[in-house]
Length: 342
Image (cartoon, rainbow, N blue to C red; front, side):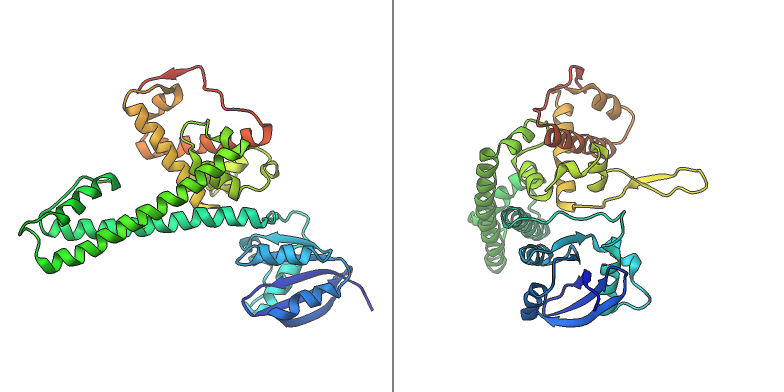
């Protein structure tokens, strides 16, 4: 009987699909596995290549199967989709994974450690709480506006609306006041939780030499530095800073044919959380430039001829490239000599 050399594993919550082939490509095993059977199945196999899509629980299974002596490779699902034949089924997905993992040009996703996943969960939890707080704040603003009570934009001014709710007066009906107090209490509780998580992130960044160097870049704070450390496992896997920026979706979308190059808006591919944070950080730098603080001369020149948001994305792209350079070369950010005021 031929020896199994490559296995495609289609992950799921309870029922997993396996497609195994020999060195010549002949299918040897096509079967489903219960969750409790997965590790027993791979424990009985000789060391081989195991391909999986980088989806939910993929990093956990990759670590467990790799501990059994197998060469586990994770792939972006979008790259596997092209190998699915006709209708989508678990068996067809497992076969496509087995085919894709053998391609010499396939790009693989580094396997995350438990510590890296934990750091990512802290940041995602913070992002979730911030989103919930924004929803509650928007609801409070909308209800208060119906009563003719308005405050300036920004979370810093929400306190004024909460103070209006707590103050005595007949401008808010008792029933409405009771409901609005529930929203205000939720906003205050979420703020406490967010600040607690942020303190944990800041403490982690201070203890990490690489993350501290990243915070020397204008527009990069502890949250961005912590997110980079949690998301980017191997910066040397990117050939250049532009490849890193393209991976984050900060480069123009290309739609070229017949020798004609057509570039559109940014692709918005890759990690949405880190891309959003970089654009927010770039926006803060531009706001400083508007207030008269010196910034790199190219930013001032670009602001004079391009829209504000376009400049923010361009600066986010520049920050991403700088982050890659610091990660790969192990250097500290040096302020450019050409500085100007907007």
